[in-house]
Length: 503
Image 1 (tube, rainbow, N blue to C red):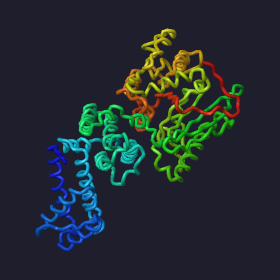
Image 2: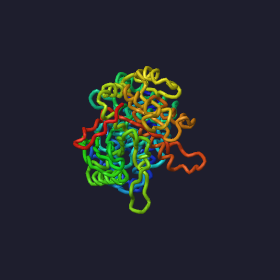
Image 3: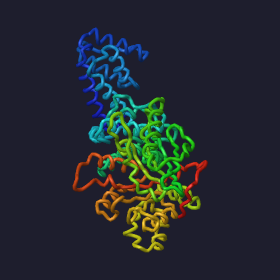
């Protein structure tokens, strides 16, 4: 029984809106049409349904009240109406109202209508296709992969919330709608709005005595790095120590959502000048494969990772070109999150333990990950810097200068980061002392959430592709991120020279 006055008021409003929508349906304007509707409903529910009184409005009100007292009754009413009048323009509204009725009873709150206004105001992306992709991702996180994809009519935060409110919680888990609200709170840029969403969740948690599950929040790691059904395509480029024009080119993939991981592929000697084309060919093969398999449409993103030697680490690979049906090629950054990885770290197994420990601590309970600005903190004393990098809360190093040869400052800073196990290194490809670079990086790390960094950088690069400012180029064009995931390690090369650049 609902005891919150606000929820009761909301249900009274919903009954009125349901009756008004039903009254507008052409097929229900006659006594015969209303009688046919209750006959269909009787068959579906397995018990007799009757119309009360003679006046149409009162008959519909009585029908709505009767269905509202039975689990799934209002949804059954809408299903029957869709059979009676398949193209009724009111069907979508009636489904939303029926879902809201269920949600209001499942997650009662004294200010339900305020909750509705808040969730209707939330937009995850300007592009409708991207909005739906993000909603689909959050739905899978909320349901822990236990439910089918969202219905086609779920295109807003509010409609997805109402859809999920009717889903039961799994063993030892929160109701999916509550997980969804927490996920939203972690993504909205408005701090006051995020706090309000979390207050709703906390009140529900106290009501249902599941505050421990809210505090534990097991779903957040899966959400933050968007691992759900993301395919990671990892390239490795190993230069020939004798011929600067040749490399060994390899690749492998990880698909967290399906287990469709592959072993090392390629290990082919190619010309350095052909790398861009080789990368495009491998991506094309993966896109064809995903486009022709049943699981492919569920892929949330193809994340492209380049494992490069230090001498190539400053190459703007995120703007390498992808072929298209026309003569116009597009940059990788238009379609994919792109990050860099270090070939030297992959080969220096002596430092893997520190790396794995730092990566694990980065998303552990109570973690407060932070940046280390080498120019600001370390000055030019590398010994002091090595000592300071022992702090396990440091997860990312910002270089004092762009990478160059191994005699430069940047290489020594990166080597110290590898030794300390710091998994993330950031720099500007042109000028690391740029004040705008400092501001952008600081904003990327706001809120302490790190695991979603590659996707936030991808959004920044997408903004740069839309920017047309010739005087002040967008920082998304020069920002570089080395992102070494310690949970995705490559297989050793099957053959080839194997670069062993020392740290």
